[in-house]
Amino acid sequence: MEACTDEQLVIWIRQDCAEAFVELAKRYMSLIQAKASTFCNGDLEADDLYQEGLLGLFRAAKSYDGEKNASFRTYAGVCIARRMITAHRASVRKRDLPAHICVSLNDTEYQDLEKDICSPVSDPESLLIAREAFQTLHTRLQNQLTPLEQKVLFLHVRGCRYSTIARKLGISSKSVDNALQRVRRKMREFC
Image 1 (tube, one colour):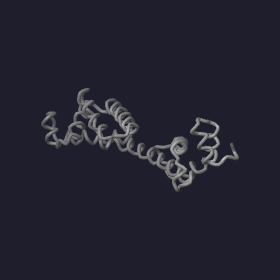
Image 2: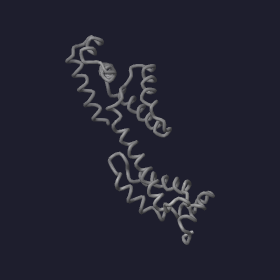
Image 3: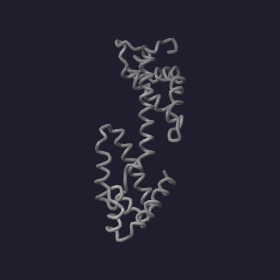
Image 4: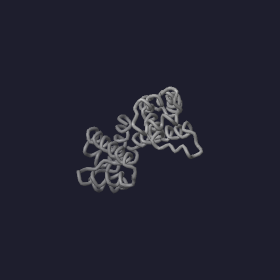
């Protein structure tokens, strides 16, 4: 296998030869590591990025068209980078999710809100990631926030003004502001 060209290994990989992919992965590990170094952040560990890079390499091997003007190395580099970019964006979305979503007060509202948040996503992988992140956030907020803080947060994210929230909940506008400050502090602590 070591004497084979990358293109020959690709042919073997398409015939489900695991040894061919192992050889190809050995050849491209330095490229994967180099590309991973540009995406390392607090949310993604190097091992996760290597795994994404290997998935990108495998996809490149399965979809490479030798009749196009690009070499396999060039094509694989693009596939690896795109896979890592997708993983990076997903981790950023997870990190930024609390700023864009809210917690509902009952199951019906929760399901409606989850549909609103996840429905514009057309990619099944992104949809799954968004749902998991939403459910994790929902659970954390239920455990960390008081019932009053949950209600205030829900109404605030729905676009209600402080005075409207105060009137609906029978509290002062200052209590609404204090509740939102506590929510922000708690969210910073666990996000």
